[in-house]
Each structure stands twice: as C-alpha cells, then as structure tokens.
Image (cartoon, rainbow, N blue to C red; front, side, top):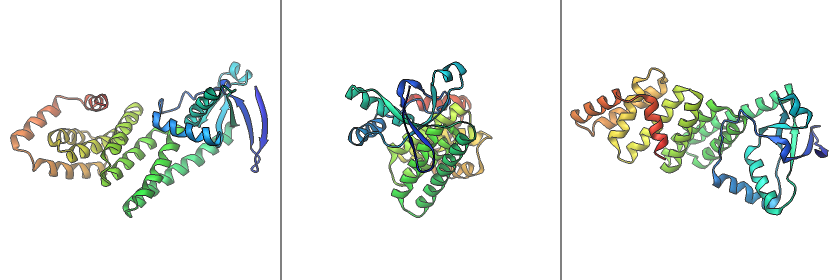
Length: 275
C-alpha cells in the first residue's frame, strides 16, 4: 500500500512505501554488509530518522507488479538499518522511495556510475598528492556507490586501489580487508585481471609482515598467468626482485615447485578461507 506522496523541487515523486512491498534486487553484488557499517547507519537513524530516499523499480514479475511490489535498486544498507529502527520502536516500517523505470532509471544509474568513477580517480590523485584523508573519503564514497548499483568490476578495481593507498599509510588490517573483498568480488564475477591485482596487494602485505616465502609464491602465480595487465606485471616483477634477495636459490626452487602444483583458484580460495 502506498502512502503520502511528496513532490520534490526537481519534479520527482517521493512515496512512503511499506517495507514488505520492497524486494531486494537479485542483481545486488554484495550479499552481506558489515555489522559495524549497519550499526553506524542505524544509530544515525535512531537520532535523526530516515535520511534520503531509496530508488526502486517496478517488479519484473507481472503478478507481483500488479500487487504493488517493487525491486530495490540502491539503498540496501539504509533499508536494513531502518528496518531495525522500526522493529525497536514497534512501529510500521514505511520507507521513502522514488519509483523509476525505463530511461529514467538508466539515467540515474549512469549518473551514479559517473560519480563513483570520478571519486575513485580523485582518490588516486589525492593519494599521489599525499592527502590520505581526502583519498580515503573519495575511495569509500566510490566503493559505497559501486556496492549499491552492483557494479562488480568497478567495485573490485576501486577496492584494490584503496588497498594500495592503505598500504602506503601502513594501515595493513584495513588494506587486507579491501584486497580480500576485491578477490571475492572479482572471483565471483570471473574477472581474472582484477583477481591478480588483488593477489598482488595480498603479496605486498605478506612481504610487509615478513612472510617472504608466502609472498613470493603469490607473486609467481601472478607472473605465470597471462591475464595480468602490464601495470600489475611491472609492480609484481619489482616485488619479486625485492623478495628473492632474502631467499636462497634452494628456497626459491621449492617455492617454484609449489606454484606448479597449485592452481590459481585454489590459491585464491585458500586466502579467502583463512579469514
């Protein structure tokens, strides 16, 4: 059941829609969200109420569409947080939504895509200029948008970029989280170059922690895969050189043999399972 409709200055209609009439998008790339992230949103909503609007589209199933059921396009985290606030207060869960379809939805997603792309690029610029705080803000805003619109390749790429910037700031735990999420997303989307970029990030972290042999094993996996980009190749070769000076020829031969006996997918899954 639809409730009060408000017309915004830009002409779009914001409707209060019962939560049970909203289904999550089947294309949402990220199936779970961190409890810390959701709790932060929830606390903000406890204090100030629901902020912003959700974007939904008419349901693709004609029968559900006739019943007024819609699919969520973006705003998944805010919806989860608001449901929790409503449950705590024992009140009906009404959510402000804008219903878009066809060209209007495509244009909205294109705008979000462009914003996320720009923020990711700005993050790299700010990092190069030594402004870590502003780089962090740009990367996190970009990542949030990629998650909401379900753009897996761009999400993995930006997570890898963010992880690299965090290594430069010696924030290794956060960098590890970024690289591991990038690996999981890129593996699911079957984008091997981004998997290899995430592996390079993990190898760099292992090297920082003194795990030279494990880092070299990852590096050799990357170099033998033809899907790596030239940029990843150059950075990987540099890391390989830095690592091998700490090892004997016999140690290096043993590591090379291990690499030949282990598939790339197994290496990636082992890293993900180690969490």
